[in-house]
Image 1 (spheres, rainbow, N blue to C red):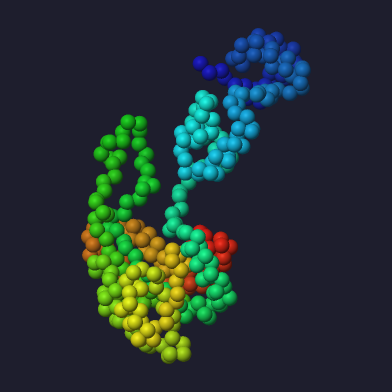
Image 2: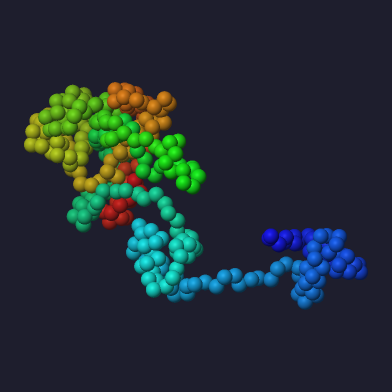
Length: 341
């Protein structure tokens, strides 16, 4: 049975009762403690003038400060390792528990957090991204607002989140209520094309099947992009941005854009963080997942995407396109590397 700890108020009460002449046994009987507890407390008070417990050393550490510093260097080199792997890499000839490893991680202010995923950047990608941003570092909003940002995105009918967790008891992993049922390939998907600028938002286009250069011209460029650009005087004609996907860079597409006087913005590869439209796709994805009841068919998903696209406001888009200088500066600070966008 665990010992009852004396609160500070009870301790001072004991000291006061003893000061009035009460014996150890009388105090113990009245308060419900053994008289030796009373005597030790009174003796401590006589020696130190205090009633609080003295600091205790606790269990001795099994690692030294030098070994702890070596452990932190291992973490910085191998941040994706599990506690078991870190234990073997740290002190392979020492018997350590994974609890010790986790305690050192906690003491260093580290915790397991969500991993940020980004496209793989080579040195050439970083150089091109940096050069692109340096060339446009002085652009103001008047220049950026001419850019029409385009992109395609694919939305799954049933999104599977790998970070999903479930509250359950031990040994109940296979209880039906604790199992998340999945559908192969997410039950199908819908691909859409969109385009935004600081002052407008073009119609969302559903892409049937895999996007090809011919399909890109017939279903996107001709009915949407070129028609929209023709409504602008040649002197103030917008600039069209699309990424380096293979259908966008086919010879037929390049010739078609040139023949229709559509100026394109050169684009560095592996740079979704420089395209504000990526954040609009994120907005749409969150809204689709939050729908109640959820969409059940691909036709419902397509209709929901077009409906939510119309609900994206001009203020939301302007917050994204108006921050292009911050995005460019972030890439420059990272020397062409990863940014928070």
